[in-house]
Structures are given as structure tokens and as C-alpha cells.
Length: 460
Ligand SMILES: Cc1cc2nc3c(=O)[nH]c(=O)nc-3n(C[C@H](O)[C@H](O)[C@H](O)COP(=O)(O)OP(=O)(O)OC[C@H]3O[C@@H](n4cnc5c(N)ncnc54)[C@H](O)[C@@H]3O)c2cc1C
Picture 1 (cartoon, rainbow, N blue to C red):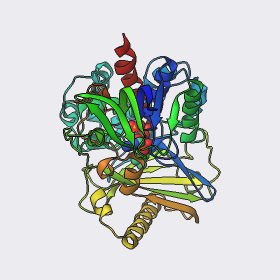
Picture 2: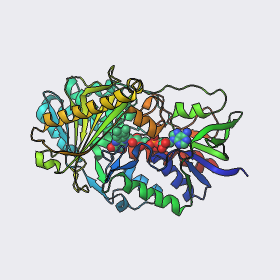
Picture 3: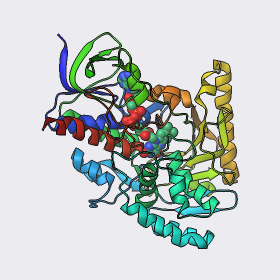
């Protein structure tokens, strides 16, 4: 007999899990369909030797202290009825933006960044403060705004081209599907989440968050089916009515929420579906594990946004990897350190198509090259780094494709976002990355808002 649901959710990433909890809480019959064997999507985890590694976690954005009511994180706790302490958050120490002739440090207190800008770019202090004031009053969550160039808007407040580039590095690499610029609403979201609210790490890594979400899903009897890839979305006219799984099973549903990405979801729709743009940005990530903690070689920062030029090139490189910039993450350098060994994660911008063309032998050799370059950067930044590497892993744009299913391994999905979640098909909605909210917090918020807007409010 064909199973019938109130809502099917494609993908057990952060957005799908959050949407599932929200719907289960209101008594909906929900099933989350995931092609992999564990939850988390791009923010999942894996085990190699005795090491438990996070796939994507550097830091949780949008930090808020216990008891705060405003902001995305308290909203997630309220909407999912998860107690604040469950995420076991530990704040960043400090992070740096490093350019050839300038450095800026930021913490979870914006006053630090203001004073750093005042020291290095005194003539820009007023403009930066005005930019903050404007950002605080801007409605970035409006679901109807079109694309507005963030570089253009920020240029009205910040005149120094180097400072402007420096301020864009973190928002771009942590949340832009667009090359070298981003939609101003997205910039506002990223600016608030990184510089105004700040960074933290769940003690125990991403598994702490995932197990809190799983616990909630179980308590609301939400079905999650792993190894259940969706082969096609079944439609009747302009209405989505169900899915066929890769094993041939058919499931029917009143609504479908998809976190698989906009072009990828449309690709699942049977018959003729409109095409949407694919994003071009992907990453490599090198993970190094060693005996001593980073402080032993004087690495005290949590994150480093490194760029060796005056201009920050946030674009698909013509080569396999762009080594001129990187994000360096020290998971040990949060207020509480939950790791036994020292660990560094280094992210570089990479080109999916170039990686996809390599034969197996060259692929492995190029991964080794990425690792060697990562070690070289650490030695450049920290000349005292002389650790024996106990374990290393490098993942490539092909890994991003494997964990997300995104065409071209596009980390932040399509350059076409669907802020209101709608698609050309009735009852088929987008949540997560291609709805437009990125990162762990953003994607959970996206799952919650799309579940509220299209399934729960749709009931009234
Ligand atoms: C290197 C790296 C570091 C990052 N670091 C951070 C960080 O420090 N902090 C942060 O906040 N964010 C970080 N992110 C971003 C964050 O991981 C993502 O924005 C977020 O996890 C996206 O969640 P999502 O639910 O929208 O999508 P996804 O995680 O992509 O989930 C989609 C799910 O759908 C499944 N799926 C796709 N197609 C199908 C199908 N046909 N059938 C069934 N299932 C399907 C996929 O398997 C996947 O599980 C990082 C990303 C990367 C690559």
C-alpha cells in the first residue's frame, strides 16, 4: 500500500531536520528522506581511525548568551523547544583578518573591531559605525527583495578599498553563492551573524547539535529514512503529489519540502521543469591532527581569514585550487576545548570541474599537494609549528557534491535563491541553502520558516 504523509522532506541536513521537528511538533505526519546513512548533510560527521571528524564545522555563527531573547539562535531554541544548554556553546577567543599590510582582530564584542579599525583606518571609523547602525535597522529577512550589490551599498560607508575587501572576506566565504559580491540582504545577515553576534562551538562538535535535533524528532515520532534517495518528484499538472525513491517505492504527500537545492530539486521533477542557475563556488578542506595544542606554537586565534593580496578573489579559480587565500580554523581555540589533540582545518576556494576531470592517481596526488600547501601556510603564519601529523584528511569539491548532491559541488548552492521558498510547482517548496539562509543556524532557521509558512500556516 502506498504510504501517505502530510509532508515529505527531502534531505536530513540541518534545514530538513529543523523543518521535521517543527512539523512533528504540530502533529503532522512527516517523513524525512535522506540518501546517506547518517544525518547532518554538509554539516555531518565521520570516523577515521579513532578520530571523530566534523565534515563542515568551523564555528557556529549568531552566538547569543543564555537568556537573550533576540536573534536567530534564541528563535531556533524557542521554535524547536530545545533548551539553550543542549548546544553546549563555547565562545570564540578571537579571530583575525590578515592581508599583506593590515590585520584586523574581531571578537564577539563589536567594540573590538571598531577599535581595530580606528587604529588601522582612523578616517573610516565614523563610516563603519554608521554602517553598523544601518545594518541593525535593515530588514534583511524580507522575502520579496531582489538582488542589491552589497559592495555598492557598503562603498557608500567605507571608502578605503583595502578595508572594504577585508570586511568582505568572512561574509563572502561563509555565506555567498555569488562571486566577488553578494546580495546586500545576505551581507547584512552574515555581518550580523559574524561580527555583531559572533562565533561559538558546540562542545563535542556538530554531533552535539545533531543529537539534540534527533532527540526532538524521536519525541515527535517523525520518520527519518536513510539510504532513501529520491529519484523523482511526482506531479499532477502543476501540483507535486509524491516521490519515487531510488528503490522504486512510491510515497504520497500533501506537501514536499526539499533541501536538495533549487536546480537539483527541479531536476527531480518528472517531465519538463524550468532550469535554474548552478553556483560555481566550491572548497577544499584540509584537516590536520597533531599531539600538542595550537597554543604550544603560539596560535591563539580561533579563525584566520587570510589573503595574500590587496584584493580578495572570491571566485572560481582557473586552477584546481586558489592558494592565495584561505580560512584557517583552530577548533581548540574556543573558551572550552573539547578535543584531545591539536587540530587545524584549512579551507581553500576550488574549482569542481577541474577536480572532476582528474583520474584517480592524479586526484590523490593533488590532494597531497593541497595538504602540503596547507602545512606551508601554517608554517608561514606560525614559524614555531613543528608538529608530527598524527592524522590528515583532505576533502575536495567532489566530497561537497557527495554530501550535498549539489551540482558542481556548489557549497552555497545556486545563485538563484527562492526567499519565499516557492517553486513553479504547487505544494513543492525549497528550504535550506537555496531558500537563501546559509550556515548551520541559517539553514535551521530556513527549515523552520518554510515549515511554518507553507505547511503550518497553509492549514489555516
Ligand atoms: C568546508 C565547509 C565548512 C563549513 N563551515 C561552516 C561553519 O563553520 N558554520 C556554519 O554555520 N556553516 C558552515 N558550513 C555551511 C553549512 O554546512 C551549510 O550551510 C548547511 O549545513 C546547509 O544545510 P542544508 O540543510 O541547507 O543543506 P545540506 O547540508 O546540503 O543538506 C541537504 C541534504 O539533502 C540530501 N539530499 C540531496 N539530494 C537528495 C535526494 N535526491 N534524495 C534524498 N536526499 C537528498 C543530502 O544528502 C543532504 O543530506 C560549511 C560548509 C563547508 C563546505
